[in-house]
Length: 128
View 1: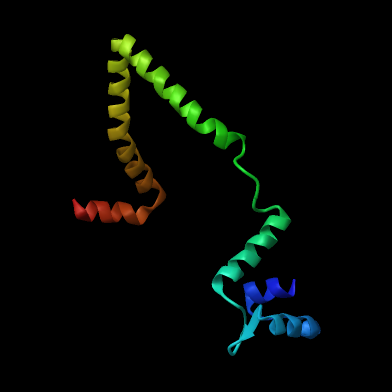
View 2: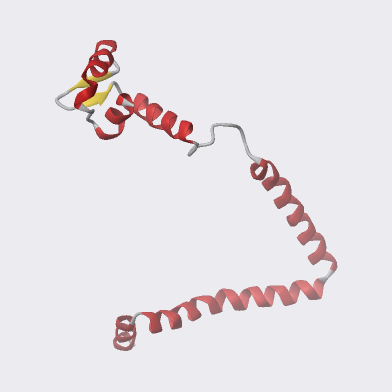
């Protein structure tokens, strides 16, 4: 805990002088003029090790989603290619909807922004 306190905050509890002296004797903690760990890499290691122990960082290999993500994306892409190549009318309709949304979303956000921030309405009126 003393090493973690020095790595994160740069100071230690006054009650931990004995432990701090041992860490300084081993070269893990230095004083120049404030307390700090021996180098930046070791500081990151100490901070990460604490987060792993608390369960905030998972130190094991890839989880189920990491293993499933690429095959699922490839499957969806293959299905979309097959579907749109065999259903030409559906492709045309879908592209029309996507194009309309691409043009309509910024306009919709601008209208919503006028109602949420009255100052932008004054800026828009004075700009035009």
